[in-house]
Image (cartoon, rainbow, N blue to C red; front, side, top):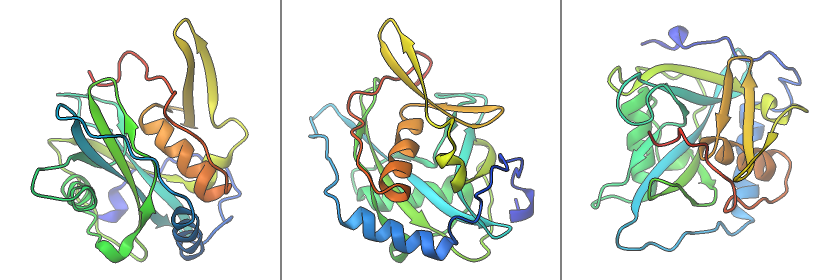
Length: 220
């Protein structure tokens, strides 16, 4: 699938030009390097995964790449970041870049990696490590039909909208929601990762993800 075929119905909230992608990449690298990321201790039963907060540019606007999972298998039809299992023979960073390439066709290298956010544990027994990656210039996309239904560039500025995040009280506790488009509401863990990216990289302040709830449907 060529770049022009990516879904482009992203919310048009502007300040779309708060950053250029180059400026954003410099800021992200500096702010991620200046804070110690939180690591979840690895137990023998823990399944490790890695995901990518992929920063791309669309029509001069820096965006984060969100995927919609294929309508079958685990997490069917859910919003997600590119990523997947860390194989025993590879590092978390290598797994993140491999999964990014396999799922979206976006080829990135170590020099494109800007840093990492906090590990996050899921109710399915995974520990996810999020990596922030910048992909400047014109890149080709080719989604994995088996795993990805569609690709969606969301303007980074949308993460700073007054309505984002949204909090909902439930009997189990407070649920985070990231309403990034009229038809796109993202929950933890993906929503939590995007929220921390916005707080740490865009706003320059820290947040702890360890107490955020996942909705019941996550991981199904």
